[in-house]
Image (cartoon, rainbow, N blue to C red; front, side, top):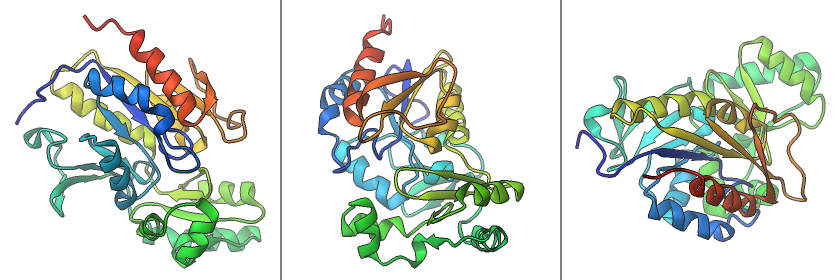
Length: 278
């Protein structure tokens, strides 16, 4: 297979936590939009800080076949049948039955810098690697299975910082690293971002001949900012409790009414209905 077997006009990139998923990790409020996505054969690309193992849970539940962007853009995974193998970029690795394009260094290599930076600014950090599964479940509400998979991080570190977070982030940026935060944890990566990986994947689709692709991105928090800056049509859903994440400002950003998947559902339906599909 050297091309896709369906027409392509729109790519939708989406965050998971508090965006497509509600706080119970359910996407039922978005079912109408998901049905439209299936009807129009629109690639739905999960673009998340979750690990590969976590993301696979939702790929199966959503019954989608597209590539996966994991760990804030640390890698793009290509499950079988998700993309023409002969058109994958040089450097793609074959592991565990799928191709992987790694776009960042290892999480392990980031740990010394995180600990040194915390010491310099006079704070403490607790990484997800040191948390028992029960503690992760208590913080996030995830199942024990997903909480265990959340610790199997390859490209980013999840951590908690009880005080001096801004000072710690500044020190980490001084070292050339990329700290940000999501729904429950601070995140630390090296060179990766959701936006860089989405840009790379969009370029791969365009190389298949889909030159006029429209790209849309959906998020809820600061770690989604690079994605929303990259796409043609950025959307921000309301956070749990109402309101929008502070600091997420992008040209042409559409702030959707509705928390998480309720806003996502509204935004996707309006997006699809506003495109000329002829």
